[in-house]
Every structure is written in structure tokens, then in C-alpha cells.
Length: 112
Length: 112
Image (cartoon, rainbow over all chains, first blue to last red; front, top):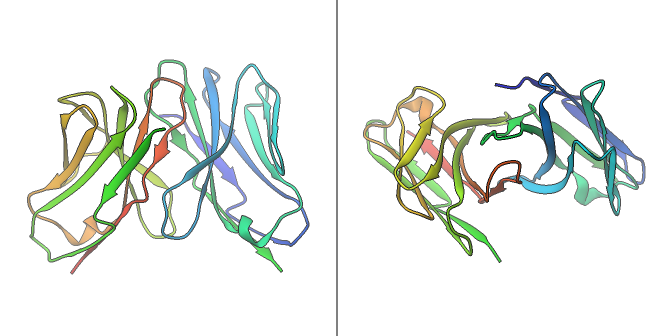
């Protein structure tokens, strides 16, 4: 399957600062890139996604950017709050593919 | 709106006992269904997926099996549990290709 690398594995930020998580992928046919947030003891929840025909998408304090040439995409969280503390996963899929390939996850801790 | 239910939320089973975890989706028809396992502090490992009733694809050879007896019901089973089957089991659904996967709240399985 697709190889997805996610960095960093852990990220600690001061409340109010920004957090950035980056993922790289290997298959140039990939065209759908969702991000998930997983809180302790819960299932992952979709927080934002982007398709290959768009370079950037924003939803309040969360944004995702996509660089298809370099095959990487990033999650940006601005004005971080304690409730942003969670594990974040990026994922990738290609046209006509039933499966998502997930990154290994980033544990984000927002310090008050 | 669509909802996904998994049960039980937690389960403690002895080694060698059978297993049956159930997942149901409401508010949609003919979803693609998925079973994942997540070890503590780790990423998501796809175990099985199904694109229709009776159609099961296995991703990893293992001690588990899956069945889809009805359109919106997905069952994960084992005849004899191993210690290595411990983990957090997640069910997910998607309406089709290149669509977000939506996860249930998972089952925490502990094998003693």
C-alpha cells in the first residue's frame, strides 16, 4: 500500500501558539487527504480534508495545505487551546481505492 | 444523519475464548465497512473491509475473521483468542471511493 510518513511524532506547544504537522506520501495518484483527531479512548474524528484539485482549505482555526508536486500536505492549528490536545492522524487515498493509508500519528499537547 | 455504533465498549476475555464484536451503521445504505485494530500508543492497522453483503477482504493474516450478514452490519470474530489479540478495535464506514471514513467509538479488548 501507500507509504505515508508523518512528522513529528510528538508536539508540545504553548496555549495560543500554532501547531503544524506534516505528512508525505509516495503515490502520485493519491487525490484525497483527510485529517483525523483522536481523543483518549475514542475513535478518530474527521476534522478537515482536502482534495487534489485544491491547494489549501481552512475551517476556523484549522487549515490544511497540499503540495502535489512535492507530495506532502500539512495540518495547521492556530491559537491552540487545551482541548486541541489529542493524537492527530493524516491519511491518503487514491481514485478507486477503497482503503485509506494512515500516518503513524502525532501526539499534540497544548500547555496552559 | 448517519451514525455508527460499536459494542461492547470494553471487553475482558480469557485466552482461548471466542470473540464477537458488532458494528452497525444507520442512516445510509450499501456503505463500505472497515475493521481496524490499534495497539496502545500506535497507529491504525486495517484488518478487514467489505464493499457489500457477504464480501470480505482480509488485509492481514491472523486469528480473526469478519462477516457482513446484513447491509449495515459488520461483525469481527475469533474462535480462540490469543494474548496478541488485545487492543482497541475500531469500526468505520464510508459511502464510497474517495470519501471520508467515519469511525465508531471502538471496543477496548483485554485478553487475560
